[in-house]
Image 1 (cartoon, rainbow, N blue to C red):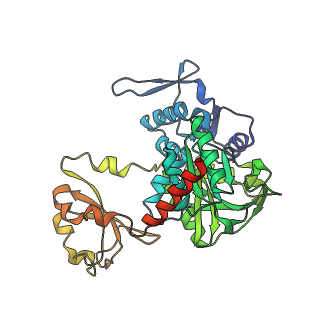
Image 2 (image 1 turned 135 degrees about the vertical axis):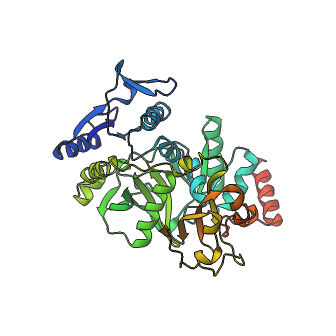
Image 3 (image 1 turned 90 degrees about the vertical axis):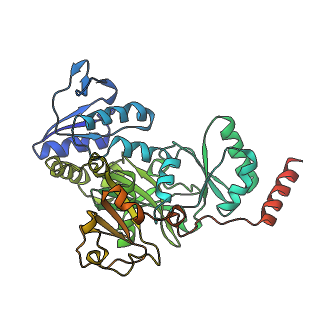
Amino acid sequence: MKLAILSTAPRCYSTRRLKQAALERDHNVKVLNTLRFSIGLAEGEPSLYFRSKELSEYDAVLPRVGASITYFGTAVVRQFEQMDVYTPNTAAGIVNSRDKLRSLQILSRHDIGIPQTAFVRDRKDVLPAIERVGGAPVIIKILEGTQGVGVILAETTKVAEAIIETLQTARQNVLVQRFVKESKGRDIRAFVVGDQVIAAMRRVAQGDEFRSNVHRGGRAEAIELDDVYKETAVRAAQIMGLRVAGVDMLEGKDGPQIMEVNSSPGLEGIEGATKLDIAGAIIDYIAGRVNFPEIDLRQRLTVSKGWGVADVLIPEGSWLEGKTIEQTGLRERSIMILNLHRGTSVISNPRASRELEAGDSLLCYGELDEMRDLVPDPKQRRKRKLRARRLSPETLEQIESDRQEAER
């Protein structure tokens, strides 16, 4: 396999370990500076140039795109994709994970734990937003901070207001997030490769620091995750569109709470804590996928006019509930069920004898006109479980009164 590692820091631990692991497996590997690429666009001929020379052919590319070069870095990765070079992390996946608001928006439509979060711009919305996420203390985050930078704990509502106002004045977009007290300055980093968690560590904050990042002095220890945490980490990475990811979770009283999905996770901390060859596992996964790369199913299956892919959620009382796939008659209508999602399980190419249940989600392919009556009303597709607490008019009135009193 001929592999390109995109990195602007060839001497950093993660890049060196990935190159070493590839060489140990007799792969042809080069570390290429992401910023030295240029992109060529012509009809039917997407191309890349490196140091002003046309790039030779590669089987796979492993992006290590830093936050400061996200726009250009993802453009380079996207061009590799157009040239049919395999990448475990697509440009769309990197963009999804890099913006904290965007990633939480994507995760929020799935049944996966995330801390209650609010995004506000108007000063009048700050107090209601703090109340919605559970009140002070709250966590305030800038949208594109990394390694714990731009994460602030506000102990009181007035402090939170002042911090948000200051950050907004500096033209920073901020999130207000519930402080998960039960995590007690700890979090979990699960390292996902493909559809497995290959390693995990718990990071523990030291002293008065509430942030557990290793870069903030946090102590790391290897742990074995239970199935719930493993499934949550893998689902979060896949929802983002990533096959190599570091998934950060808090240990909430209701189970795992996703904090962040990192598309360029560092290897030094987790390899040091677990003593595992994580770099090797990444290289082995990429080598295994080169000859059988994943495809964008929706894009490929919507080429035929009038045909496409649809998600079908089976609500209670649906005519599909309680019937086997064969009894529904979908196959006679040229509708194929590609995947059946039930809870945290995914059943691919389900058998005709499989009985459908309320709450099942079906990924179907067929004629769009035939599938129209399968897609539920938009109201039925809304989340069945409301995470954010609704405020009564009395509470809102009291919040506004407190705000005006504070201004006086």
